[in-house]
Length: 221
Image 1: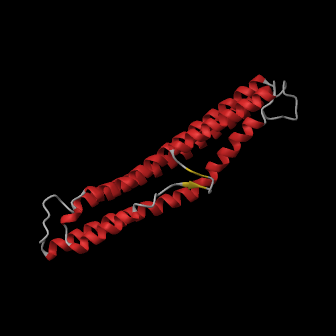
Image 2: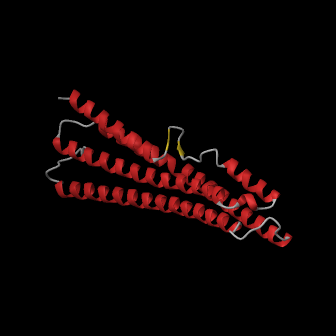
Image 3: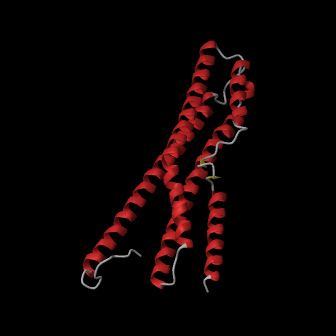
């Protein structure tokens, strides 16, 4: 809790107003920022799905080996469009990540500090627990969306693998095989070089936080 260097009984209502206003503003900013970040990342998932759909439509089930030159050009254009939107989605993801990773790391540090520095006051203890639970929930939601992005990215290569690329002309097969080769390298969201955002990372962070909190709490007894 904040320390006010004045008569807290005399200025009780002003202190209460300041505390509530601070909590409301902080909560609104956190929710707004998280919602905006989640919206950006869901937009990335949509871009990956569009790329998957374009790849699927590039080679339809009726294709034969002796396609006309015009059809070959159309197939190549559709594949190029799919690859182009896939690259744009990856660049946009990196841009969003570089913009928000500082805030994300700050939340981690703030959550750890709340665990480490709690005192013996029961009200302060409950407040810090609420902060930690909120931050853990925030981290879980962001890791969940990051997992969706990685799954959507992998779906593109699964789609490219499942279409009938083997009946296409040779130069089109080479284009698709090049795309499949790109899929051997996983696309991950790395936050500050500390960890890769995913559901596995979220569970690891949550279990580690609970373990540290339990140890610190037991040492203060």
